[in-house]
Length: 320
Image (cartoon, rainbow, N blue to C red):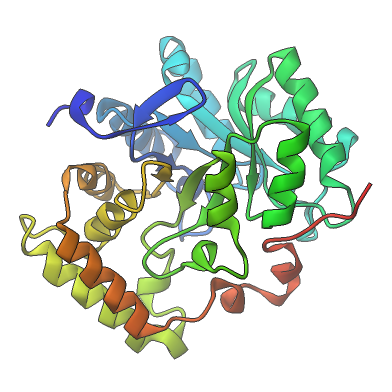
């Protein structure tokens, strides 16, 4: 299957192959960081494989700068990439959505990325001190100025999404979503339902469970292994696909509005991730995975985040 025959996804008027690339792990949070040349090879391969939706953030160490260097080496390829970045996290693990903070952040991002626009700018977390309307009005100005094409929110509440969407159309939300983390589906949170009601696309980060398969969360590990083993067993029916590939295939089959952005530092895993788009699970296999998830009963992701940032998950902002 060549890249033109992969299933597609669309944000705004930009269509791309269904599985994107989350660039965080190239620069932060997952062990040692390679040198630039080593990391450029991963970006080169992503491009070669037809992966055109790249996701980064101000908070991901040198991730923006790395991509900017890649664009400098490949200036003819910038227009091919649907480039998403994020602003709004502060050094003290807080969030800021003021107009001044946003302005300073986007200018720094554009400088880092060596570009004069980004395709999608997310508020990384909702600022619990600044009305969402204030933030989105300033984002809308950036759209008019041509510095941003589309606006997104990350890990927002359903109410915040509704309020933001009134001010300016929200193109996408970015949330953690995988067979292991299903908070977005929780009717008490209501975010999946609201996004679909408003026509907002759902970009799924950590679509294979973050570090969840490493045993980081010991209290849930037996349940996690039950799901992972079930995914692996289904993979036997699909040319011995990995559990991660089956997780991605399952997520893609949750709807055409779901856009996974798995990340990796390794070309081998990048190739596996992109190839997962080829896997078509049967209706029975999809049901089996859902049954495994229900039987495992893994707690909400909220319970596994550091105490210091819990208040930013699915957060609301004050009224104007």
